Image 1: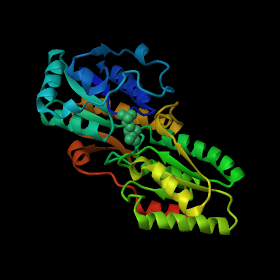
Image 2: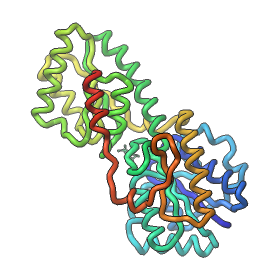
Image 3: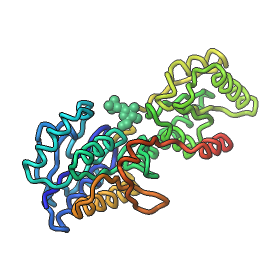
Image 4: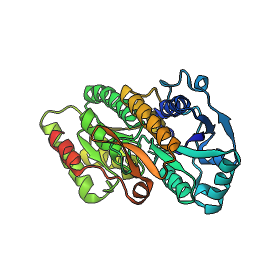
Length: 321
Ligand code: F6P
């Protein structure tokens, strides 16, 4: 059977390991696998390449995506989706695997709803895809952030400074919360509660002053991108406490790098299951992980629900800070 794969939205480390699993499991099952370049943009413009086993060699440890990716908001339009389906049908392709984040899963569901067999694979450093405990790339991004936090703590305590560290997550607090907890941050600002709110800022001022009274030599505050603007938070803390504050915006370094073992394992297992399902003619599902097991959940549920960060985890991070 002819099957295809694409990567869409923001790239995440481990996308290549997922492509490799799709291709190699597909070939093992007797399928011919094609890759569309630059996500839904390439699918719409009919830009595809055949992927043999050799094409995916030596990519398991590479960040980014060999198929490249794009943000392609035009794909929300039904006429664009229909054009993509007609390209797939013309080539005799019977099923598509979409590797990407929340928005990409919506696109995958739209294709399935228009009767083109589609399976989603969650990949996003933000870990904001409903229906899976972990999306591919999240673990690598967390490890990047905690590595940086350790380095910043060294310089922060040497200078008795406060550091505000902005991490990615326009709408998601997953990186901020999990890296904050794992990296021992002293305070975490999530997107759901605007930090510039006076009550919240006052809480931070109080926390910083108390820490210095207790003899602490530094304070590390993590701010999710969507909770900012982080420069305003830094300025406000400096003005209220009279202490030196430095702001570090981690930005896109969180999206790059070689995937961790956890991400490679997840990507390999999810990619392989996705192509097996596509080969069996299944559609409108996203593969994912739940409680350590690999699962499949209907894409309609993924598209209509929002992943939320755990309030218990937030409470724990505050207790341990
Ligand atoms: O892919 C998710 C993400 O990294 C968000 O955390 C961030 O807000 C956004 O992508 C940045 O997107 P872009 O690279 O398109 O500017």
